Each structure stands twice: as C-alpha cells, then as structure tokens.
Image (cartoon, rainbow, N blue to C red; front, top):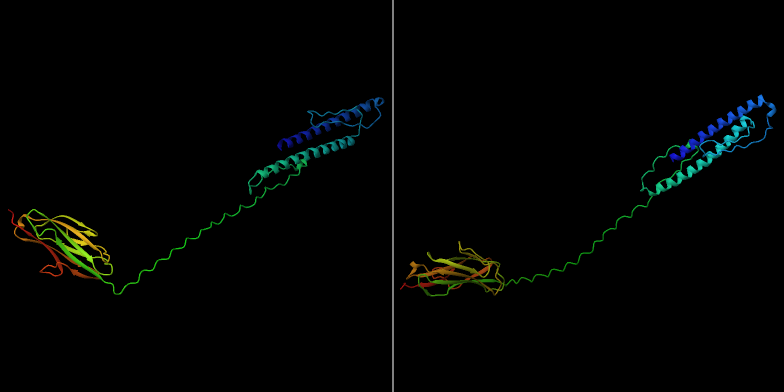
Length: 294
C-alpha cells in the first residue's frame, strides 16, 4: 500500500518536471520565433508522448510552438487519466487485501486502521470481519433413572406368647483330683424359650488359690480379670458355652474345690438355674474333691 502511494507521488513529481520542461521549451521556442520569424514553421497540432514509468520524462517535440494553455490542458488530461488508472488499481488491491484479512480474523476482532489515501483519489474499502454463528449450547446431561428399591420384607409378627427361657448350668470334668491336677469346667447357657434372647452376662468365680490356666467362650467376650462373660444374643433352642481350665492348688488337699456361676443380667428372660448351689439357689456350682497327696 505504501509503495503504491509512493509510486503515485513520484509519478506526480515527474509530471511536474515534464510540465516545467515543456513550458521552458515553449518559451525558448517562442523567443527563437521572435528572433527569426522567417524560420517559424506553420503551427500544427502536436501530440506529446510520455511514459509515467520511465526515470525521466520522454517528451518529443518538433519545436512547434503551442499556446501554454493548450499544453497545460493536455498535461492535465494525461495526469487525470493516469491518476484514475493508478488509483483504481490501488483501490482494487486494497479491497482484496482487506477481504482476505477480514476472513482470517476471529469473530469480534476489529480490522486495523488504514492510511488516508483520499489525496490520490482512492476510496478506502469498507470491510467488516465475518460474524460466525454462536456455538450451540452443550447438551443437557440425562440422568438415568434410579433402579427401583426392592420392597423391605415385612417383619414377622411378634408372638405375644413367645418367651425367653435361659438356663444356666456349670459342670466339672473330674469329681476328684490331686493338688497340681488340671480340672476343666464348662459353663452353659441354653435358651429353652420360643423367642431369641438379646444378651446375657454371667459372673464366674473360683476358690481362693485356684489358678485359671485358660478360657474359651463359644461366642461373646470373657474378661479374665473380673470373670464376667458377655454371651451376646442367643437364639431360641440354642446354647452357648464357656470353657475354663483350672489348676488345683497345693494347699487344697483334703478339701472341696467348688466354683460358681450366676446371671448378672438377662433382659426379658426367665432365668433358670441348673445344678444350683446348696447355699445359693441363684447360682450354679461345680465341685471337685481334692484328695490328700500320697
């Protein structure tokens, strides 16, 4: 764009030089005609040939004197024709360039400002950046339906006549032993009722000096420090057991080694004591006769 404008300005400068040269030629020719009027040829129309792209104006003249007004009118006509041709080419080139630039720009980006070429007769093209259609909205996620919740089976009706009947019993595997022998006691809690027992706590004791060698509950938890056994739930018609391994002490010779078990709690149950102690009907006892050491 700048090169085209510069070229037009150089062309106008060359035309100016040509006009000045032509006027000088005409003035010189006019002086010669006055000095030697006998050599003045008959006036005739003369065309001036000029190339706007040459490094110097190429005026050809046979030194025929033309009126200055005619020379200027001829030059103006050629300059106007040249201006229109160059200006139209420049205007077409600008329009193509701006259209290409506008097509390559993202939507909303303004076009650059163009220089003012109105003094060269160039009308600047009006080009706007293309508007692209707005992006479609993202698809709305479809939430799959949740699977149906299976119905909760109804709880069986509570039998008002159902009862919890817990029977506690303790037994020893040996009726007689000697000091240093090992005796195994089994504590049993049986649910003889028609409903499940939620829990039961049983206290277990041994005579002084008797050492607890081992313990093993079939379910629940047994605390060796306190002797408490938490049985947990007991289904109707089932039983749970606690195995206690005891060692007969040396000083127990000639005595009865009796251990006890009793309910601490049995919520909602009717407790039944099997093999009850002779001195306490709420506890069950298991005894072993310790013989004299031989």
